[in-house]
Length: 256
Image (cartoon, rainbow, N blue to C red; front, side, top):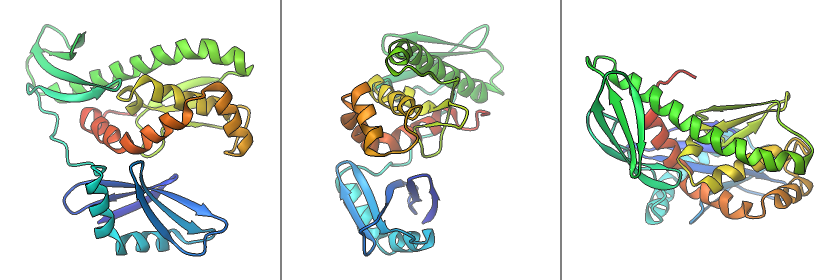
C-alpha cells in the first residue's frame, strides 16, 4: 500500500487499486493517534508535532480495518475503466450522470447535448485519445469559468475585494487555493461536482482575501458569504475522491 502526505490529506492506494483518502488533523489536546470513519469519510487525528512517518505507520497498521469500514459505507474509490476511443461511457458532470459518446467528423470538437457530451474526432485516430482529453479539459474549464464569472459579479461588491486572476487546473488533493498574489486556483474536478459545491470552494477562497487562516473569524466570513458551506464541504469530503479519480480518467496526461 503506497502512501504520500500532501496538504490536509493522506492518500492510500490499496493493493487492489482502490484509493483511500484520509483527512489528517493535528489537535493541540490530542494525546494519541486516533482514526475515525463516518459517512463523511476517514479522519486521523494526532498530537501536535507528530512526524508524518508516524501517521503513515499508524494508518498502515490499521489499513485492513480502515478499508473494511470505508467499503461498508461505499466510500472507497474502485478502479475506473480507462477512457477508450470510440467506446461510450458515463461520468459525473455538474453533479449529474452524463453520457460521453464518440463520432467521426472533419475536425475535433465537443458537442454538448441534453444527456451529456459527444466527442467529434477526425480520422486517422492515431492521436485521438490525447485530442479527446484536451477537448474535455477545455470544456470543463469553460463550464467553471462561466459559473465563476457570474458569482464573482455578486461576491466582489459584497467583499470589497477581488482576486487578481483565476487559474483552473487539476489539483492533487486540494479543491482550491489563494496564493500570495491574490490569485485563486480551482480544481478542474469541480466541473464534475454540483454547482453549489464549486460555489462553496470559490466563496472559501474569496474569504481568504480578508482572512488568511481558518480562524473563527474566517468561518464567520464564509458563513456570511455562503450560508450553506457546511453541507457542501461535507459533500466534497464524501464524494471528492471519486470526482478526482473520474477527472484523472478523463484528462490524464493533459499538460498543465
